[in-house]
Amino acid sequence: MARAVLSGNEAVALGVKLARVQVVAAYPITPQTTIVEKIAEYVDRGELKARFITVESEHSAMAACVGAAAGGARAFTATSSQGLLYMSEMVFWAAGARLPIVMAVVNRAVAPPWSIWCDHNDALSQRDAGWIQLWAESAQEALDMVIQAYRVAEDERVLLPAMVNLDGFLLSHAYEPVDAPEQALVDRFLPEKTPAPYWIDPSNPRSYGTIAAPDTYMEFRYKVQEAMENAARVIEEVDEEWGKLTGRRYGGLIERYRCDDAEVGLILAGSWAGDAKEAADALRRKGLRVGVIRLRATRPFPAERLAEAVEGMDAVAVVDRSLSPGLPSVLAAEVKAALYDRARRPLVKGFIAGLGGRDVTPLDFARIVELTLKSLKEGVGGVECYGLRGGGGGDG
Amino acid sequence: MASELPLTAIAAPTKGAAGRTGLWRTERPVIDYSKCVGCLLCWLYCPEGAVVRRGDGGVEIDYDYCKGCGICANECPAKAIAMVEEGVG
Image 1 (cartoon, rainbow over the protein chains, first blue to last red):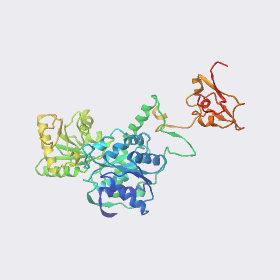
Image 2: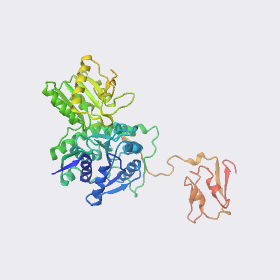
Image 3: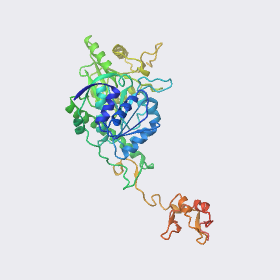
Image 4: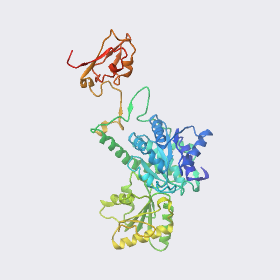
């Protein structure tokens, strides 16, 4: 392995190169752009033998990936925020058509008001499309996750597209030392794509994406659910295998950090898990047993693994970098739903934080733990908008 | 049920997959071959592929699938196609 200092976006591009992606179609948007710029360099220099399709919009980018994948090619695109929303129709299409495309989403707030900074609402808006949704914490994990994502997506038990989420700027533009796996190792882990089981073949003409009447539509949609359930197992298998090859096993669907004896847990996804872990370490030095559960996947939602991880905890704080107006925390609602059927469950307190790139530091996570303990004392969970100007923001 | 279906909605081209759509017709096109100039515009414009080219280069209507829309009659420059009410003549 060669060690290099790479930004999160450069790490993604290197992952794409190592995965020997055959078709890349993309439209530039901050903070994603440097991914496809780097890929364009690889293609131009002949280091990646791929067709690079410059398109006029994100909708077309995904449409081109759909066509490429339906033709049997390994396809990639990347986008952010407004671009992902513009692509949305084809995002659903890729999933329903069962095409194992991988897309990097460099998470950025959705306008208005304009913002280029980190926020998870863009990816969340596509939650029900049928895409596997994965979240990286570091540049290293972003690289590894792209390669893992193709293995999971192309597995015949799955055959769904996969989204690799990485935090805008916090991860996309921050430079970290990264171990680049050898090409031969990646080739063993991720063999050449076989175009199965459905692909466009001119000698065997078929209509793809035809109408399904009320007597079959539900079954097609249910098949996506079955594939997601399979994906939960495959994500764990693939992470374990990658761990054996590289020494980097991330934990499958979730990463458990100092959870075994924890009284309080922090549950979140993305790069700020590093800050949460630092806060957990600091609080443990003061005698409070805090753990961190980092969601590596939100689709499939790791309900079982979460329930196991919070066993023995008195309270958990779900820290959500998105807001669903009127709810307001999808992540907290999903964690609660995952734990509802358990005989014993911790108090679940939701926090909306860090929207539009607002900084959340280890001190903030320590404060969030403190507020969670206060809620535990009062016996009330609820959701609170953390650090809202002028105070307030709690619903109890 | 779900296991009998493919993973996603795919169809092979099949003649008459929607049944004998010719039964929907209220008027049928009738070609007057003495006026036909063989321009093939009816064959080109038929949205159902129900104007069929014969081996001799002429055309005929496939009444099993012609829905009777009348586009062929409208396009015919020689006025060689008449729309005739079903059950009459």
